[in-house]
Figure 1: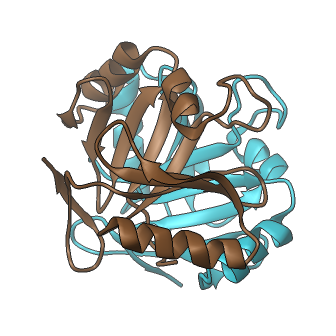
Figure 2: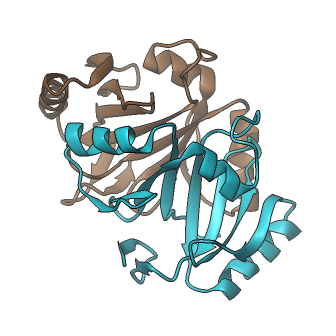
Length: 140
Length: 140
């Protein structure tokens, strides 16, 4: 798997107040604020998303032991690439938490866990602009 | 505060096995493996660090409620810049968890919390190479 990252998503108890913290205290500018908040960082996106909806996307209970309330993500350029990464990781014995599938937000994604239950989403997002090196350049 | 990030640090229960996961399953190459593990990503470093040592660095108990076992960091180019950021954030009412101070690893750092106890380290690290945009270019 390429050694890069596209998203860090923090599960929020109160999305509006957490967004306001980053806007008012850090003076950061979001590129998306409807239901999920995106801050474009240096090469990736810091996302804020209600923790219960994040858990639902993973397919676990929000308060489940082992669910750390945040996820990491690496994005690829097609559904086929995502499938290929899952095949490779499964062959290496990586625990698949959610097999890749069409997502409600219009993309295609699944989740694997590292050896300490940190969750990695592997996704194709048709709305995400990536440069040749895989850095996130923007979001439509 | 600049809209970028220099480190994501995951607290590890078992540093060696977590490092091995990323090396053997993701096939990633660390740039540092002695006591702390660094993977150079796209513009920042993904660090693995024993969770109890991470808690100690923050100044909290490892199992304390609210300690999420991971931290985010933004690095600046001097101790003076770090002090300036802390001054600014304190004036805006941001909760300081640890005032900036000399760190055991040879740098200078402190921690603030966002409105949901996600911890941000603000640091100067003399061993970190940063490019003009603030991306992490390497680590000595």
